[in-house]
Each structure stands twice: as structure tokens, then as C-alpha cells.
Length: 257
Image (cartoon, rainbow, N blue to C red; front, side):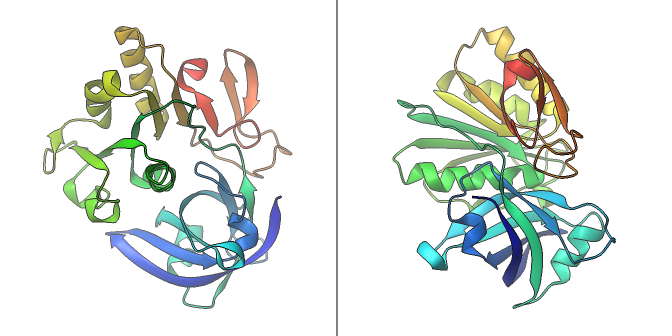
């Protein structure tokens, strides 16, 4: 059930320069939430900023009415600046959970997760969930530099973690899609979150390799309402026009690219 109301800040931590994790109380938002879903955040009542912003669930902890959730974000504008400045017991107006998150298919044993930056948020949530179900997981992360790569220490130790940096300062020099090409034959299912150029490159790899296994993606299209009212987040697919917020953000890669 979608909830609209206030979530209370538990704590905030800067995990690498300019990128933060904030934990919130508010089991109404996360009681039924799962990886790949999101919340729409409005830092305060009023018209500045005018539109809310979408943030994927990053992690969950606790059970029942004490369940809490975390958001991962990079400070880039007014909304994220205010989020990073909030302190314990401050409140934030949200709507969620929204959207259709990842679906791991029955019989899947080897999971390949690929992303970078704040696109790592739903992948970390998914890794936490699927490790508890006995999956074998490889996470591939892309970043411009070592300082901008998601910290390995924040992933469960059971996860195999591979990093590609554009300047070669950590892991493989190149793009995260270079790592995807390496691990794709191993994976029973691939799930990714990132920008459009990353998905286009992944689609080229999948077609070249003739892969027929599922590759799910979470689109990062800008959303104005999060509920399908405004029709501002249209995605053109092989099955027709879909709304990222309502029909997605989960799509099959080759249905879109």
C-alpha cells in the first residue's frame, strides 16, 4: 500500500566524497517494499523545490513496525543538499513504496548485478535479499575514479565485487560494461541500474553474444509525480509506450534497447 507522510531521520553518513546514506524510521514506507522500488521525496512543504525526486531503496533493517530503510544519494541539487543536512529526528515528506522492482526468476542460482554511482542502491538491496536466499552473486561497479567507486566494505563479504574505473585508478580500466561482458556467460540472470548509454552498450553485448537469459534493468528516467498521473516519464518499448514510474522502473533490456 502506498503511504504519503513523514519519515523520521535516524542518522546520515557520508560514505565517499559527496555521496551519503541516510537511514529513516517509517515502516509504512518499507513494510511491503522490495529492491528496485522507490520513494518520492519532498524535503519540506511548499514550492521550493517544486517537484519531488525519486530515490531507490538502498537497504532495509529491522522487522515489523520497527523496520527502517536507507536511501543512497549524491549531493547535486537543492533536494539532496537538504537531505544531507538533516539531523537525527528531523522529518522528510515522502510517498512510497512506488514502482515495480526487480524480479529474480525461479531456478536462478548465479546473479550478476551491474551499476555505478547511486545506481548501486537497488543492487545492494537486492544483494542483501538474495544472499539470504542462497544465491551466488557478482556485483560489477563502474566509476570515473577510485574515490567515486562504491566502497567494497559496505557489501556483504559473500559477494564477489568487481570494479572498473575510467582512469584505471581501481580495478579494471574501462567501463562497467567491460566487466558485464566478462561475467555475462556465467550469469543465470543479470540485473542492472544505470544511465541510458550503459544500457545501450549492454544491449550490444547481449546481442553479440546471442544471450537469451533475462537481463532486467531499472530505468533512471526523471519522474515528476511517481504515480503515472503526469505521463512525464514515458519509455518507448517493443510493446508500446510505458510509464517508467507505474509500469517500471523495471524493464527487460531488449524490450527497450
